[in-house]
Image (cartoon, rainbow, N blue to C red; front, side):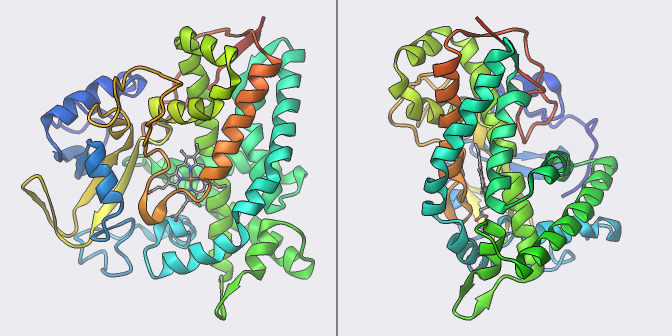
Length: 412
Ligand code: HEM
């Protein structure tokens, strides 16, 4: 990807991912983008924006696109400059995780990981997740309120994924800073400082996991790392690097979006008191509320794909080597699919949002995320039935990973 700065020449499009005012509420601009067309070239990031639900949904399943091109082409083939050697630790880590692989490597690794990360493993965790959510909310209530982000939204998924992987409790406080530093690289055009932090975190996180994997090899436990070590398929196994990359991916993907979905969701509820009242009156709405909140304020706003073989969208030819940016937040507000998309409707039944993606990279953690989001919502509704917003929250400046800096709440 070209690396223009935030101050690049205006593109002429109502798309300003580096502008806090745009990030605060991108949805009106998305309506304009959808009206402008099905595919729009955006010069500052040298990408083709795709804002309609039908197109995003189809492209996610289109094998002419890929999350990487390196399985078929060189950087030079694609007219791209290879990343500088000093960024290597980040790329080694990232490029061996299934999210940034394409078949056949993606198929092989996802199959092996699925042997350890099974629906049964996740279902078995349900009572633990609910107990943890209740404990966290009880502490918040006893304190009379606090920050929903640091008191509930964050500790819940971090503890769950750390527990699954068998990360000792004493080491868990390092996970969130490492993860945040690595995730900085997933924003559009990351700065050199962001890259430096990501590289440092990649080295430290990898070293930590290498030691943990060695310990589990010596003494296997009932955890996911031991499961990844044991997983094999027709004589195939994960390499040590693949195991490290998988563990980091599960840890990062396993909490960043869930934390944000929780606080974005509660902020949306506070801004829509009629909906919050309806939910308080009828907890059976929790499953549809979780889906609707994920649609209404989409936690991950944009995903990219490389064009591996030329495609055509609405008479526009997109050549091999180009990059597509699919606007998930826009797709989730497309009136061709969602009736009255700007309205939060917790009873919405027909809700094919794409917040968990689609196609081969469909979120492997979606069932776990749904359990976590429902558990914290249930605990908050039951134990803090008069929860109110204590102060207007501030948005994080990031566009792709959409979140709040905190969510201050009071218990009535
Ligand atoms: C609200 C929470 C979550 C959201 C919104 C979310 C969203 C996503 C999306 C959009 C993708 C695919 C990206 C693409 O197509 O390019 C993805 C992939 C993935 N997610 Fe999630 N996720 C969430 C929670 C989780 C959890 C809890 C875990 C694991 C514990 C997890 C693990 C993964 C993994 C491993 C992949 C890569 C799958 C592959 O490439 O085959 N996610 N997630």
